[in-house]
Every structure is written in structure tokens, then in C-alpha cells.
Length: 335
Image 1 (cartoon, rainbow, N blue to C red):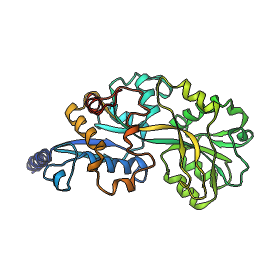
Image 2: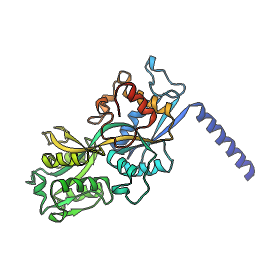
Image 3: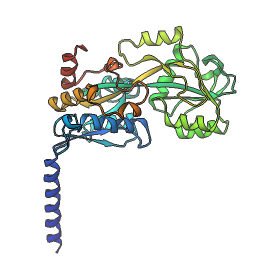
Image 4: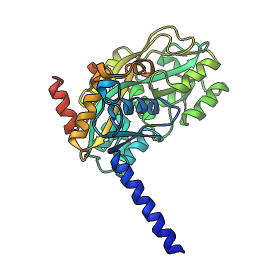
């Protein structure tokens, strides 16, 4: 009986695999938590760059993506976890912050004790992930200098946020010993902040970051500007790796914050590996930037700065995938 059951199971698995093969090629994409911007953006990219077998064609209002390709959006724990999945060959592509991509490729910062991930390749740069410095609206804090003597959430240990913050503090000549630092997850940081156990916290994320938006709905907050000569110096010092940019958190992005706030940003990149099929990557790259084929709802769901062709190569400090590079060369964007 057991033998019959195994044979039946094997036959069912074979039938399933054949059915999947008939649907064309799957291209997996590791994104982030299912309630976050990475996952939402992965859904958008999947809609734009896929063209499943049997679906309506682009000419009649159907899919306009890579022929016989279905992008599968996989929830994950974010950039660091995504890099592991890529290296282990468990996914075809992933969303990763530009600074983490550079560090992994060059075996620096968070990855200085690991082998360089030299097979990483970029497909596109999508939108800025901005450095937020959040304080209560009535805190009296108006600049980085005002953090002296305060209790400050720096980001979780070994996180990209923490390294970004430390680089920024160094540029602004502010030492960690001048305030009381906290190294907790965002959820734990928000809990402490709401309980008045922190005076300020940093976080790197797209705008609007859902967790900060929810916080602003509960209590009055303010965002502190991160600009000036020190900011310019940080950008210049990191010009070789290209992963920092100067951006603004738009006015009204969060309830009660009615001014534009200058800050630093890293970019959200779409990465794959050198082994990815060149023709498939070329077709997907072309599809995401052919905006005349985008459905009407895309612009309504995009995060701030998402899918702007003028920024398609921003923050990329690692090589492009050959398929993506072919497309950018065709449209005159040299890299």
C-alpha cells in the first residue's frame, strides 16, 4: 500500500510540474513583510514584468511583460535575508537596499567577515529609502545637535539602518557617547517611543513607511532635517560607491508634518545574479520602464519616487546584469 501511495504521489508531482511548465518560466522575487512597501512594490513589478502563458496580450489590454514569464512575489524579512536567499540560490531575484548590495558585493561593513558576493547583479533602481529622524512634536529637538543628552533609537544591531546612522553621525561630528543609544527592532523602538522611553529614533525606509505613518496617526510627531555641509561631505566621501543620495521627505507624507524635510537616502534596488537568463532579464527590464503600457492603477500605488526612469540607475554601486545593461544602452542610459 505504501508503495502504491508513493507511486501515486510521484505521479501527482509529475503532473503538477508538467502543468507548471506549460505556464512558462517562473522568476521568483524576494521582497519583504506582506504589510510593507517592498511587498507592495513586488506586486506592482510582477504585474508589469510578467506575461503568463494563456493571458491576454498587451495589445488588447493584457500583460505587457516578458513573454511566458510569471514573477512570483515572495514575502521575506527584508534586504539582509534577501541577500542570503540570493546567494543560496533559493530565489531568482530580490529587493535590497543599495548600501547593503554594495557592502555584500565588496565584503565591507556588515559583510567584512564574509566572502564578497561577486555574482550579484543589478536590474534597476526604483525608489529612495529615506533616513527618518523622528521626534515627538513638542520635544524641542530641531537638529542633530539637540540629540546630546537624549535617549535615541539607532536601529537594531547589525542592521543597515544602524550603519547608515553611524556614518551620518560621524559626518556631523556627533559621538554616540554624547547621548544614550538604543539598539532595538523597529517594533520595539516604536513601543518605547510611544511610552516616552525614547526621545528620538532613526529608521531607513520608503515614504511613507507604514509603521511611522501609523505612529503619526496615534501621536503628534516631527521629522528632523539632515542636510547642510556635513551631509554634503558624507555624499562626497561615498561618491565612489554611489549608494547615498540627497532627497526630501515630502510635506504631508505623515500626519502633522506639513513641511518638506531634507534627508539622506539609499535606493531600493532590484537584484539578481550573474546566472539569470539574459533575454528574460532584458525583457523584464524593458517592460517595467515602458510606461505607456502601465495600467492606470500603477501610479496610485507607487511609493514616493517609484518608477522614475530618470533615476533608474541611481545608487547602483555594483555591476548591472547583462540583460538589463543591454536595455539601458538601447535607450541611451550608459552605466
